Image (cartoon, rainbow, N blue to C red; front, top):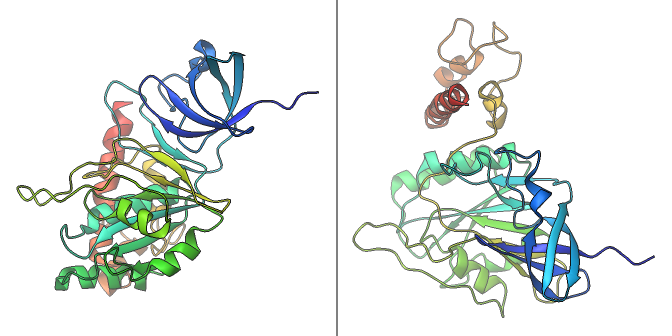
Length: 309
C-alpha cells in the first residue's frame, strides 16, 4: 500500500499554500472546495506549521484534503470579514517573543498580550530582548526585570555583536520555534545570525514614526540547516487582538495570579469584589500593577467580543 502524500505547510498566501511534501518536493497547493464545510468562520482552514494530507491528481494540480490535529496554535489579530479565530502558526514548540531594549522601546501591554496568546495556545514562550548595544531606559530595565522575576525565560541578545546568539542557537535546535513581536526589533536579523545560510529580508525603523517597517509580510517556515528543527518568521505586530479565550478563563493565563478558587466568590471577575484574592495580591505587591492593568484591559475586550458574537 502506497504511503499517503503529506506536506508541511511553509507559507500561506491569499490564493495558494506552499507545502514541502514527505518525498522532498516544494509545491503550491490549493484547498479542496469541501474543506471549508463545517468550519464556518471559527477557524483558519490551514496555517503555517500544519501537516496536511495531499491529493495530487496531476503533476500541476495539488490539493489539500485535510489537516492533522494541531498540538498548539498562535492566533493572529482579528481580521474583519474573515475568520474570527485566525491561526497564524500551528504546532510550534516554542514562541520566541522578540522585543528591543530601545528603538523601539518595548511596551508592557504588548508583551502581556503575546504572553497570554502563548499560554492560551499552549506555546511555551521565550522572551528575547534584542539590541543590547543600545542604552535602555529605566522603564525598560524594570520591565525586563519584572518578567524575569515572574519566572519567564529571558534572553538578552544583539544581532550586531552576536551577544546571546550561541544560547539562542541551542534553544532553536531540534524544535519548531515561531518568532513574533513588534516590527523593527530584529526578528529576521536574529534568525539570519542564528541560522547561517538563511537570508530573511530585514527592515528598518521608520524615523518618522519610530516604529518598525513591515518587511515580513506573511508567516514563513524555514528549515534549520543540518538540523531537524525549523523556525517560523512572522510579520511584525503593532497591536495583537486576543481571541478564542473565554473571559472567565483569562485569569489562568496570568501564572502569578492567585487563582482559581482563592477568591470569596467563584465567579469573581477580579474587579475589586469583596474577598478578591487578586486585588489583595496587587495591594500587597505580590502582583505587579502593570500586569493587573493588562488583565483588566484584556478582560473588557474579551467581554465586548463575546457580546458581539
